[in-house]
Amino acid sequence: MKYLLIAIVAALLFIPFLGAVHLFDWDEINFAEAAREMIVSHHFSQVQIDFRPFWEKPPLFIWMQAGSMMLFGVNDFAARFPNAIIGIATLVTLFAIGKKLADDRLGFWWALVYAGSWLPHFYFKSGIIDPTFNFFIFLAIYFAYRIGYYHKPARMAIFSGLFLGLAVLTKGPVAILVALLTLLVYWIWNKGKISIRFTHLSLIALFASITTLLWFGYEIIAHGWWFVNEFVAYQIRLLTTEDAGHGGPFFYHWIVLLIGCFPASTFLFTYLRKRKKTIYTTSAATEIKDFKVWMWVMFWVALILFSIVKTKIVHYSSLCYFPLSFLAAWQVYKLAEGKLQLRGWNIVLLLFVGIVLGLAIAILPLVGIYKDLLIPYVDKFAAGNLRAAVSWSPAEMAYGISYIILVVISGILLMRRKVTNGLLCLFISSIVVIQLSVLHFVPKIEAYSQRAAIDYFISLQGKDVYVKALGYHSYAQHYYTREQPHSNKNYYNENWLLNGQIDKPAYFICRVTDSEPYRHHPNLEVIGEKNGFVFLKRK
Image (cartoon, rainbow, N blue to C red; front, side, top):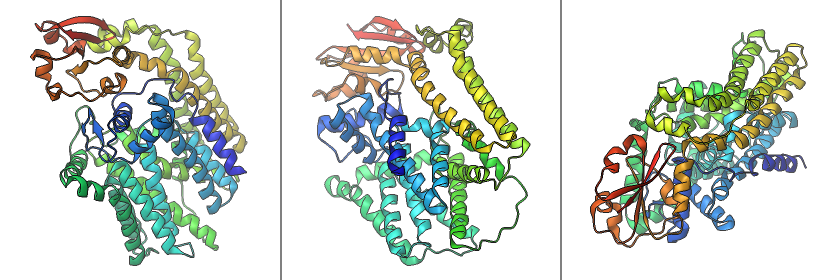
């Protein structure tokens, strides 16, 4: 009954209004378009974009989206639905593991801490790969940990291998890298003492290989090595080089986790205190101690690995959400049980980060109202974005102000030793404000950033035309025009579209900052301009 209740609550949190805002370029639209093209082409073995092989991602998550689109139709809701299901599975899983480690209360706190933190919650309402990948890699590591505590360790090794294989099929060999580094660091930390034997490692490797070969093996047999070679080369390039526009300092992800995983992230700092030597006398206590070590290792491996990686994107550090949320939940659990007390500086840090977040939400409407003051200080494209007709009211500041008040109330309750009430207030208020922000603010932000372009593409939906983005990279023109395969392969040649003997109408879009060469192009005419985007057509 408790599992069903958590599943129902999770469904209510993650499923409603999934299609309330357009998918965001690049990642969300990229994956959704790959799924749509699978359905159109009936070619499910290779991921495609623009009906050409796309070797950047394995197919598992794309298959999940394609199945969702077959069920609900090709739309934004269907593209995000798989992650909502993964969100439900995640909260139920966290409750089950927490219950097994200690009791129902730990399971409840872990699920609440995860759902009540900003980015972990928000990503289940998105259409990106990472929530699904993170779930699989976490389960692979969890079952590896269970090898030492289950009476049938071979079964745990098999499960670990299966989920590791699923993780590889979701995002690629980075899953193997994370798993190996976690195992190696755990072995070093434990001074060579580990319950995972060579036979267990062999089983993990065997079943991970069997799982991944369901795709890699078929692909090699059916189409040769070239697609797999390109896929592996891209994964190496992604780790060792910086994508344009996606660089950042070493501590980029540290800041992302502190702010983005609030309130959970602030409870990690409760570990910064003089440690008391604890003697673990029961097997259950020993299991919890060992699981904490695994979670700390997983956390630091993921954080340091993706801090070293040249490309810096917010969701790269999302693998930290599982260990971070457990380590925070363990401290929350002990606080609620009266086995731990928050120090004054812990509460001050919690209040500081919470108030900063609340202020950011409160200031957002003011930025919208007084956007004209910003226009002289930004480039032409950003200025065009800001000119979007988006309605704002000073009353909308109440969202952020209310959150600040609730965080302060939580802090006061914690200071007065009304710990459970303070914790519930903190995490439940975060859940409510996250939901309201997604419903109220995200559509407005999307109106600035891309809606003019999306509306332009939708206006061409179902027409037998060519559509091309000039001067910038986008997947939106394929997905929102519901593009079909073009029989004339000259379509892939931009010069032909601009200057050649085209066989059907051709439409173009560019950013205003890149528009001058195209405004004066002899074969193009400007047919519209809106919010930083310029729309053109072949004469």
